[in-house]
Image (cartoon, rainbow, N blue to C red; front, side, top):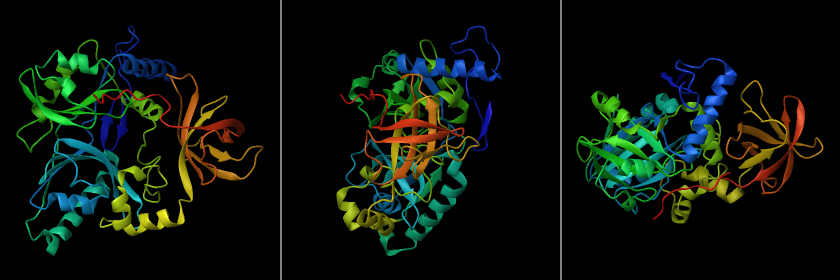
Amino acid sequence: MVPFAGYSMPLAYGDVGQGVFTTPVIERNKCQRILVASHNHVRTSAGLFDVSHMVQSNFRGPTASEFMEWLTPSSLIALNPYHSTLSVLLNERGGIIDDTIITKHSYDAYYVVTNAGCRERDLPWMQAKLEEWNASERAKAGPVEMEVLEGWGLLALQGPEAASYLQTLTSFDLQRLTFGTSAFVPIEGFNLHVARGGYTGEDGFEVLRAENALKISIPPSQTVDVANLLSKAPVQLTGLGARDSLRLEAGMCLYGQELNEDISPIEAGLAWVISKERREVGGYIGAEGVKKVLKEGPSKRRVGLVIEGAPARPIHTTEGAKIFAPEGGELLGAITSGIPSPTLGKNIAMGYVQSGWHKKGTAVEVDVRNKLRKAVLTPMPFIKPNYWRG
């Protein structure tokens, strides 16, 4: 177990992939074997992640769609009901306060998931913006309310066998759910809100308990029962360690590493969350900062790398890795995430480099524990995604 955002979180489960272990694994080499076994099981079968530490909120009211389009740069009014999108919360400079998944249930109802590590920043900020909105003429058609779902559960079932396993528990045809959509699904006596998507690059579902059409998530009294239901063979419980390696292979950002308040969505390769029209028209918090980066061009870009010899670690750790031009040339940037990829058998990483050095196939060098290692900029995701799109 490791501390994370005020929670005690499982890095790995001691009996996954290593039948002789029945207690939490402490030794680093044993833990690494279990992390790899868990990672590989999700890539080939199915794993269940407890992500109940994530902050879940409902926004409801007659002007909820207009408010959400001011709070974020995404085109949510045009989003169909029971569809989801990745989005970002931006400061006035256009820097990323947090990344978020937004699910639209109706024109006046949204479900939002934000990062636990950003909770102390996000919740007061969103509440302040909500009060500002409700006090303005923009809310004259009706105010918006925010409800934080404290103590409610959230589970992610991921992997190529996730759908076939879940299908055995319901009469609902899961083929009707494509990537980025959701529905209320009856499963073994529970009315679950099931959203197709996830953080691993594999097909999968995020599962929530529905109290009614607006109050979603798993009540504390039922979280364990739902988790037990969803973690039977072939599904295995999966911890934070494998979650990080899976998301990195899938080329997905982690807040605090690839994203922070000094990085714009343009630099982070997330320009696609802002429609062409909204890039030009604005109308959301941080719009002027985003327009400035678009006009002047980003000074740096998020890139993927494959590194020879040894894995590179993020710049903010004691093993921080800097990126240089070949032959020990100028400093270009830094690594933000790096691992030995269990799937590819290569050392992969993400980082930021100066614009102009961000093209795929560009050769660079990475300082790994005071030794320059050759690396090549590589398109992301590193693995082919297996999302179900119908």
